[in-house]
Every structure is written in C-alpha cells, then in structure tokens.
Length: 303
Image (cartoon, rainbow, N blue to C red):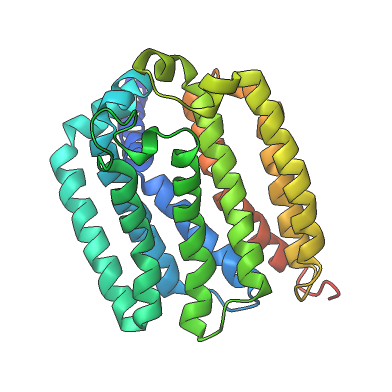
C-alpha cells in the first residue's frame, strides 16, 4: 500500500512536467497546426498531406518560441507560469526553434518554390510584427503595438499556410476551397487572439498596451466577436455547400458553434486559465478529431 502511495507521489510531478513541456513549449500548438492541414485537405477534397502537416508543425513550434523571446515583459505579467518555464529552458527552446524552421524550409524547398514562399509567411510576419519598425516619437515602435494589428497578423500567419500548402503540393490553383479554408482558419484565430486580450486586459492596461478590449472594454468586445462569429460563420456554412460532399458543411457549422460556445462561457472558463487556453488553442485539434471520427462512423454520407 505504501509502495503504491510512493509511486503515485512520483507519477504526479512527472505528469505535470510532461504536461508543462507539451503546452508551454508550444508542442500543443504545433499539433493544432497539423490538425489545420488535415481540415484543409478535407475542404480541398484531397488526401491528407503529411509533408504539409510536418512543415506547419515545425513552423508553429519555431515561430511561437521565437516570438516569446520578444514578449518576455508581457509574459512575466500575464503568463507567469509559462514565463518561468520558457525562461528556464530558453536556450534549448531557442535553438530548437531555429532548427525547426530550417528543417521546415528545407522540406518546403523540396516541394517547390510556391511551398517555400508560403512557408516563409509566418517568419516574415513574425519579424515585421515584433521588430521595432517605427521611429521614436511615432507613438508605436512595433507593429504589434498598433491596436488590432497583432490579431490580424497572427490570424493571417496561422491561416495562410494550412489553406495554401495542400493545394500547392497537389499542383492545384487556389480556388473556392482555398478561400473557404483560409477564412475558416483566419476568423477563429483572430477571435482567439482578441479573447486572450480580454483575459489579459489588466496586464495590458498596466503595461500601456492598446488592444481592442482596453479600448472598447471586455463586454463590448465579446459582443463584437459574437456578432462577427455569427455573421461570418453563417456565410461560411452557406459557402461550404459549394464544396463536394456533406463533410465541409458539418465541419464549418461545428467549428462556428465551438467558437460561439467558448465566447458564451468566457467568464466561467477564464477562471481556469490553463483549461481555457487548451480549449481555445485546441479547437482545430478537436475539430480534426471530430471530422476523423465522422468519416469512420458515417463513411457514406450522401453528397
């Protein structure tokens, strides 16, 4: 009995460490990137593209770990646990991030120039987003300090690669499926970044960072996001009817419903910071899992 108690005592800290590594090192977000490629392939009516999924996994891991080097001041206030983890392992994470992006660029180069160009989008966006571009006295030093610009850049960086890479690798021109996939990825990610700004509003106010919630207030921002999700989501679901099969419509409707769910439950979920991050950042993982199970359970839905 005492032996079991000791083993349980040892297992709990080990699981906690593994969990922290998975979440705080951005591996969790990397899996979300792979899930987005799976979703994009379905919307394009293409088989799963493991090369595109690997590229996006490496790119997401690299960009987020590099970006957190430039966001240490904000993280120290808003994300104390994550800041402590990334600070302790900053050398390993930094070198791993550089290596990951180099491998991603090499994989993309083998697929062709278009793939390489798409793979550089998050890197270029990350540099433009984080590096001081404006002169002193301009009011803003970095693009990320411009209200809404952070959310727009992050959403575009997340949306473009998974929407474009499967089509690039298949030698297809960008069409309706690419546009629908891009919009479907863009707006949930945009909403996510603004929702996290609502959660971090106190730290942003203390740091003098201007975001949509610091300008409009949390409640008005939530109402704006809800209206955006309903209007754009309904349009996307209707547009999904243009794509072959019933899966795209089901996927799009489920995704919009998921986003609306955590917007409605924001005030309750935000009290559990880590759980809220997992639910918000993991939406594409859950959607991809739902989609995969749907194709297994109902493989012959009518087109």
